[in-house]
Image 1 (tube, one colour):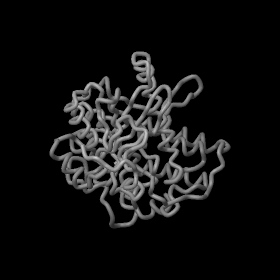
Image 2 (cartoon, helix red, strand yellow):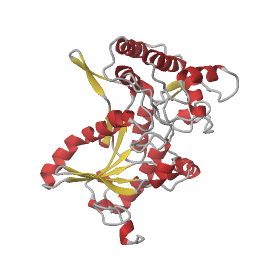
Image 3 (cartoon, one colour):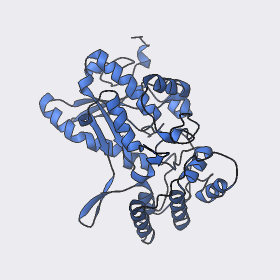
Length: 347
């Protein structure tokens, strides 16, 4: 392990070194969502095996429901949704299903708990998130993952009689943005009497080409959303994966998503029109719909009609929220800062 000057060493981490010693941790948890997450899992599975602590390796996915890149039947074959795929990727690298955690944002609907998707939450709040106010990440991902680990933390806390040591592994990479380039690859993020959490970015230095090369070499399946059409294997589709329509998505990715999921795009547009708050300041849904209707640009490869009871129910819930007074007054201010500092990764 290379040595750095004392001032460059991470502060307050469990391992007083530039890189974590996996034997120092009780839980190593890798967040899965897209290509970068599975590459991070690939790295950590190998390291955990080498260190003899593979039984401490867990995976977690914050499921965003119908907002995520969906599954699709195409040319006689089914291509799994992001939620289904990450579970397969976890087992591909040897993590048993019992150590794969799936989280959801849930709300009480009368006397029944149910999952709540992002667009419903947007309708309830009367505003979209943006790069500086990533409450979509904090409320639907980070806090849910922390809560999902709580039962395991309580169990281990009693056995260990000390705070549980967790290494939180993310697939964030430096070439995605300036802020991510400046993010430490090993740092302490939480320390209390119950848990100590250090964050580690094992693929921070990887280029996009290196990520895809690692995926190709491993043979692990990746999501069809990255391809021009399911099964093409050309990676000529979207550049990133998580919410189909993401406030941090590029213009090309956004147009592609509108063309692939027109009913979802129409629902986003309805929310934008009725709340008066733009999906993106520089690229509102009204403009995206016009751009998607023009010739040229990315070919969707496949178009989902999504005429099903699940989407009907989502649409009805969104409209009920839109019909009610907004609890939180929407600000018209947006930021186009791509920093995404709180992001858990959705490459």
